[in-house]
Amino acid sequence: MVIRKAIFSTLGAALFTLLLTPTTFAQNLPTHAELRGVLKEIAAEDNGGAGANLWATVVDRDGMVKAVVFSGEERGDQWPGSRLIAAQKANTANAFSLPERALSTANLYSAVQPGGSLYGLQFSNPVDPAVAYAGASADIGLENDPMVDRKIGGVDVFGGGLALYNSEGELLGALGVSGDNSCTDHNVAWKVRHRLNLDNIPEGVSPAGDDNIVYDIDPRDDTSRSGWGHPECSPEATRIAVQLAETRPTGPQP
View 1 (cartoon, rainbow, N blue to C red):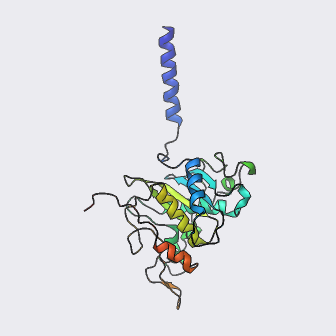
View 2: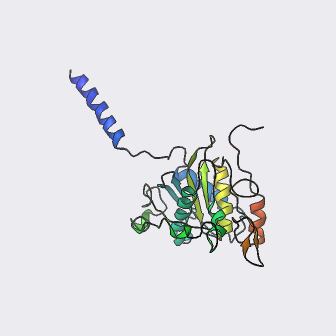
């Protein structure tokens, strides 16, 4: 009888804990160690920028921050302000991507300009300052970064944010990278996503049918021919973007 009561007590406690645990979409997202390791490797490559250290943030499909990392040895080795920008980019790419279509933050630049199809989007979904500036500075960028398991919010509309899709094409959340120019941030994010095998996207708005950065702004009138264009940062960053690995298609293939 004592053993039976103990078993039921244990099962009841487990069920109670399960019922109180919020459902998230964090499955198959990279861990802090995985994300940091890949970011450090990619940041050491030629990405078309100044070679600066970078921040990277991953959010799940609920917009909950799951990992915050930096590529340098210490948190001060990269722009402190880019920690929050990386988080906002991740939030943006997740918030405006769908299971059937991915939108990178780079794709949003022209669309949110005056007269663009999404003008005003950049003023929606503000950052939660209580999350952005919470916690001890010593924990920033670590596994227990104060943003982890909290919703940051925010919208950024330049390169560096990409939605994350697993090998089954499921939209899991998004990645944000910041710390160099926005074109380089995009290139780094693209490489990190590819290395993590989370670039199995259905389709996007770029000419290639993915969510790569689009360089089609006419300098004569600063208008994007597609409506999804991003300014060029440097010839080198543009060259690298054109040569980035193709995304992995999902669904039945010919």
